[in-house]
Image 1 (tube, helix red, strand yellow):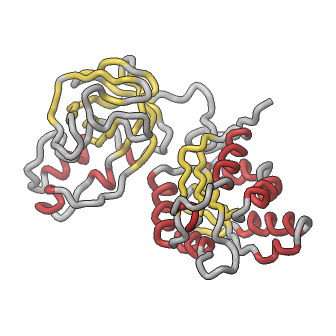
Image 2 (cartoon, one colour):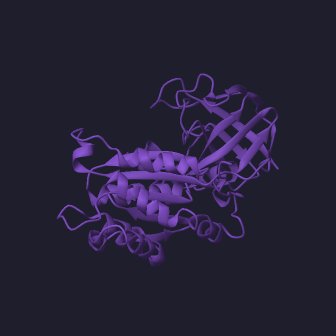
Length: 316
């Protein structure tokens, strides 16, 4: 059980948050009058009060809201909880969607202290059920009523697609196939064939969003710009070669050119990353080979059904 120590909002992005005694939260939006509210996955930011006070004890002259946190909460080590954890505070129900964030420009706190805890210790949530909260309200962890669906992201690698010179047909086709099989597709990205961009996004999706599955499409051939496998291997913690081998074996029954695919399949944390070919037809053929077996692998990664009780829910 936790307790809200402070509620902080700011009417404009880039401005310091100020403390308020209470706030109204709107479902699928965020905190009223806070600039970071919107239809996205980072509607409300939370920070452990214990982490805040420990940092202040180092001599940092900080006030509530200094890290940009909306809710300062005592009693939880948020970063020790899995993405998908739900928090109840009266009528309000929050679901954690991300741990940490990328710091694009060092804030004033970092300039003074040489570090900032929000990029590592802050978490983000979306509002499932709205209502009013007050400083001093209790917060509890609420188990989900039913298992959460598998969460996935789809990344298309294409120079022409990223430049707007070619329509991305593979990414949407993969996303639709995942949704038909009960997955929640939380992000779809279209990137140029730049390894550094891909590595950055893979790390973010695995470490911060803690997704179950990432499927990439494109960049797996012999062309000089085809570097998707190398970027994927660079972020991997463990190899999972059987999935890529199964895709090639199945595709070889359709075309001998399948032997030219260099796609890999790997694990980072508890996320499975699989490279698919670039054409929509080849993507669907590849998914035919692996879709029935992927859920078992993801269950093993999550441990007996997963920390978040995620599972595949196929349509009848």
